[in-house]
Length: 193
Ligand SMILES: C[S@@+](CC[C@H](N)C(=O)[O-])C[C@H]1O[C@@H](n2cnc3c(N)ncnc32)[C@H](O)[C@@H]1O
Image (cartoon, rainbow, N blue to C red; front, side, top):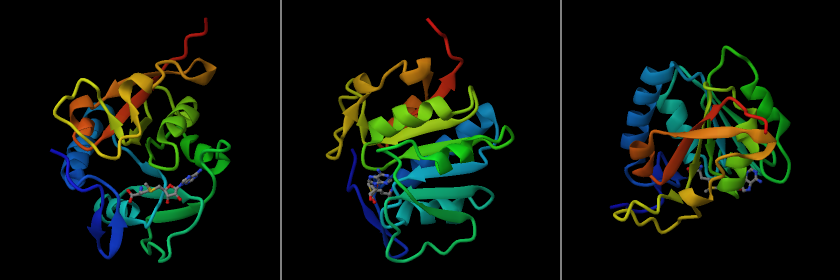
């Protein structure tokens, strides 16, 4: 069963399930085996910086980019973590979209800001088709009767299959990400109707 939604990580709040490290590592290994290496991890919602610090410490070969309206009180202080100040919800964040552009940089976008479902919809159209991954936090699968997550913000039923601009998304790593109240997608080729 899920436990606390935040814990201390190297002196900072890390606002995730207590089993986050275990399941995220399984996700990364399986996802990279399935579709190739991920070069950039982009986090929306730095918070106190606990997750960004974990990502930078653990996934040392990757570039970590974290966005928030404001900087954490103490800088993250890792050479592979870049902190960005900016709004990722009210407007589409150009700096974030530029990170997704290079064809040789596979990206993982972690939506954990002020409105995760809106962030998923907003940035999915900017993913490289069949390559980049987008995941959002605080999602509960209504079919998962064993999973009770106190901080749920949306259910799978609310995720639009077809987002704006005709973007289609396909769910991935369902069993793994569900364990930590995340849901993940890759973008499929657009079908204009
Ligand atoms: C749940 S906390 C992030 C927790 C962090 N990802 C972690 O796992 O430790 C949400 C953060 O999103 C930020 N946020 C809210 N609205 C935002 C927006 N429009 N753009 C960027 N960040 C936003 C808040 O300032 C807050 O720090």
